[in-house]
Image (cartoon, rainbow over all chains, first blue to last red):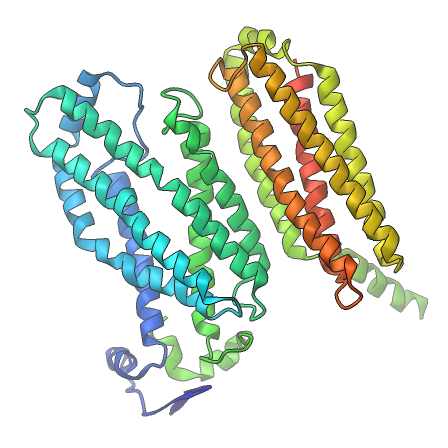
Length: 278
Length: 195
């Protein structure tokens, strides 16, 4: 069987067995790097959710208004989860690289300037430091020595959550960069409605700014507006772009013009090997 | 013949939305998002009704009504702009687009003046829960208006040259502007009218 795309041709016959086809795809599939990055993204977000919500239990965030004894108790309750969970976070943090690369690739495939992809790539690479690693370090430091001065534990608590919330500005600008690229793009890489969803996402990131001022209420870092509504929009936005990136890879022809539409299901079924890695 | 043509015509009509259908999804996203914000506001209000009533009394209803009339007028102007563009009368369309922007500028100026007045009275973003929501909702809406100026810039850019004049983009811009107006009417009702 021959799998061919514009500018790329692979002449080989994939084995019949599922495992054999998987191995064949890993060696010969013209989109293997794109599918690898996409799967890394899927696995990363699953792990991120499990680690932050269920293992370390730092999300949903606790109240910024708590007094020091409550915060020390909060660390004690999560001692093992914080150490194990953030240990794994450090282990998987490198997964951000192929993820960000895929997002930047989507912009490079558009008919817009490379500035969009490069600025997005740099911003998101840097945002992993305060948004994930600094928080993980601060929480781990707090959990590592439970007999530490409670005031220092309190300081680490504020530092960790403010660092996490502080990345929202990066996500705001990143969303705007991506949405402007989509609106200007003539290659039809993403539907325009995704750009408008990006605008909604960007506006909810603005709303996190009052978390710097308030310790209680809807605008605190755990508030209904600053966190809960923001998180619903962000999760929706993320789920949507994961699906749209998958469609982009499926449609990719390695050309420079408009991305072709997907063939219908019967045609794609007859395309044989392409489906294995999906 | 007529019996066959009628359902086709109706189908075409039911599929037709002004501008990009994508922008109508934005209207849906925004409506859902602001429903969330309004829900938080209303729940907070029920928990501390006296404070909200007391703080609300510091708002001048006449300013809210003026803001609403200005934005409704801007919506009227953008609707006239779309109509003129559909009829191919581009100078008039361009004129109405500028009128829309003009009403938008008046809205922003009156909103900033109102904020200054409220801050002067001691009602700031941190003074109480009602004013947290007031400054949050009105400033978020103002950001929408500012984005609306960029959108209107695109509309005017389209209308200026015979080489462009994408009716779809003009109508997409108008849909965005109407959304901004629609959101203001809801915010006005929530903050100024509901007691």
